[in-house]
Picture 1 (tube, one colour):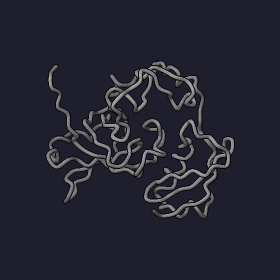
Picture 2: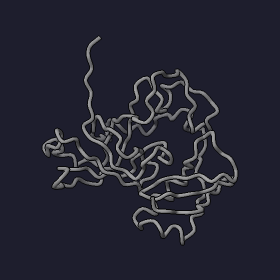
Picture 3: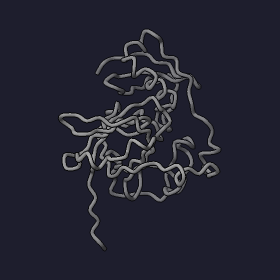
Picture 4: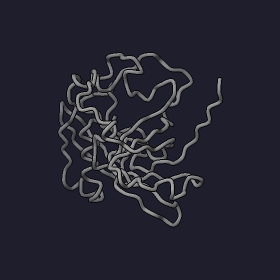
Length: 228
C-alpha cells in the first residue's frame, strides 16, 4: 500500500471549546464567526491569492475529538432522533473509518496580522476551537451547486428548531456581536439526540460563557449565563 502523508495546514479559532452545542452542519447558523489560522510553514500570502473573489469555501478537516480505533458500518443520525440506524457512508457522522469532516463556510475576508500572518475570517462554521484543517478549496457554483439534488432522509426527517426563551437580562451578559449566534445555536437543539429529559439543566460553553438551559416540549429556556 502506498504511503499517504497528510498534515494540518491550519487550525480553526471558534467560540466552541467543546463539542457540545456545535451545529450539526455548517451554514445552519450564519451568525457564527470563526477564524482560520495557518500553521507557520503555510503562512505564505501567495497561497491565498485570488481567494477573496469567492463567497464560500470548502474546508476538509479532522474530527480530532471523535477518533476511534474501530468503526461501525451503521450509525444513528441525530436528524432521525438517534433511534434509526443508517449506513455510515449515507451520513455525515463523525464516527467514520477515516475521521474526516467537510464543511462549506462563508468567506468574510482575509486579514494580515503581525504574529499569525494572513488569516481567513469565515461565517457559519461547525468546527470546535483548535480543529485541524487539512485543506481549503473554493466553492464553485457552476459545479458544486445542484438545485435538484435529493437529500435522502434529511428531506423527510422534519425540522428540529426550538423556540428560544432567552431573558433579556441574561442575553445582555453576552457580547452584543455574539447574541444572535448564541440564539441560533440554541434553536438547533444542542442536546444529544439520546438526552431529552424534561426538567434537566444542560450546559453549553460558547464564546467564553457557560450557558445553562432547560427544554420543555419545543421551548428552550435559558436559566443562567456565566463567564468562564
